[in-house]
Amino acid sequence: MKTIIVTGPIGSGKSAVCALLRKRGIPVYDADTRTKSLYDTCPGLVTRLEEALGQPLCDAQGRLDRRRLAAVIFADSAARETVEGIVYPLVLADFQAWRSAQEGVPFVALESAVILSKPLFDAVADAAVLVTAPEEVRLRRVMDRDGLPEEAVRARMRAQEIPQDKVDVTLVNDGDPTRLEQAVEQVFFQNNSYICKIVNK
Image (tube, rainbow, N blue to C red):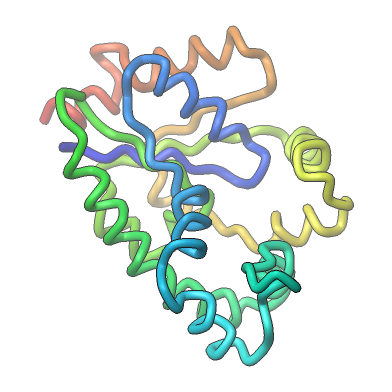
């Protein structure tokens, strides 16, 4: 079964694209959500991260403080690489188990902002679709969605690098839902589209 990556910088609207794919019956693996689940369910994972980073990451209730972890990894590239080295093998195994359970669909999608620059990409991807939007649109979306100050959002933007040479198709999401749905139809489902040709190889 083919895997199509849906990627893009923070605030580009990857989730909106994936919601339209789900509407068409395409299973979507949300890497961010599944990773958060691993933090909660994988025994000893948070402890391993604390030991590797040399600082506490839990709140007063002993649960992972996600904002504290985000502040660390988006401010320090070495810390980010350390965390990814621990977490990504778990995400890969989780994705492969999830994909093996999918049946009767032409392809599955994997939604991730950072996958193109990670080892996970080469292990699973058959093609990659980049979702884009103007920077100021993305900034406002994330500030409104997450309640974060502007500089915190810009720090996350700076931390995301998307290798353009690994992108097969670019899809623009400027905020118009009708145009977005038309773009998703054209990119993923029209018979002569690049994605359909990859899926049907």
